[in-house]
Image 1 (cartoon, rainbow, N blue to C red):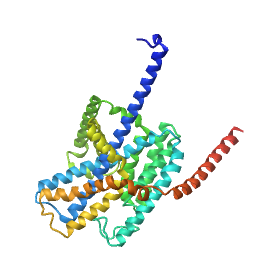
Image 2: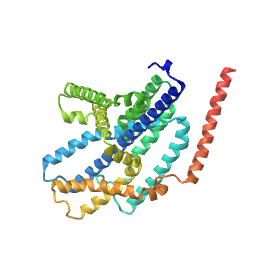
Image 3: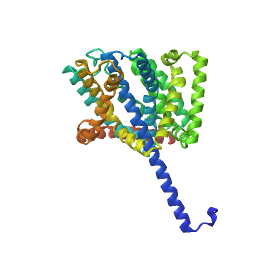
Image 4: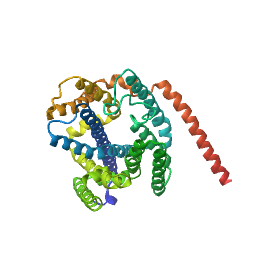
Length: 391
């Protein structure tokens, strides 16, 4: 029936229905993004656990199993952090408020506190002789590796600031500025010898966080229905295989070890988009979706704490004979720290969050007060410049 022949009552019912459906779609997207964050943060933790397990115990009794673990770990590592950054871009693009003000009053004070408190905790732990980074030389925390342990927090802070800065620009200007910033930032970090930080931010952080921020609606619409997801995954897989054979002559190792933005387009992007499609399929199961969504909401806690549990389990295995080189022993060594970490976070979050994962109210008010004062000064300066131009 045409909308012209609807009564006022029917129009009200239609408006209510549309509002409810928009809210349902919005909530589904939030759950889907939180689920993606939950899965990716677990994959990051498993990657670190694999590195620690093979450092302290070496290879297992099965070379085929070790080869499979290495290849799967490389493949999932190519998707886990890019997918997490993409989800971060989605979340920031969904904010219905001034993004510059949100960054200055919310994200900046919180991240500064998290970096400060957890850097102090990590230094203190290593000072007491607790080796947090088993696959690295001890002591690992020094001036040379100062940014490495929590590089993701630094990257998230930087990318949030970049997104807030370009939020007032048009889309074309946002893309151009992001590309130029990425190239300049990479060159600078290469010059000051922070190659690992430059690699992760410029190849995993900037393209995916800013891609999620700028193209949020377009990317999410690709995964709206099962049919679209299947078509997208087939197209991406075909593209990746063609590029794989043409550019790298079917050499798997050269594809994985390649560097530069070639790896972004022919490794990270195809693998990440296919990975997101798989996650979206998993989200149709309420049990799986609810479980990983809850973990996704605790992603910061898991990211900050998993290193301690990996180091703790590694120290136990290093001085024991639990791992006999069997496949089951290696799997226990890899998965037990992650299970312990997630269990600990689930049961202790309400107690630890006010102390270790939240900025104290007094410090927050002090930082926000100073930041807001700076923000007001900047706005007044912009207003005076506009008035002088108009005058």
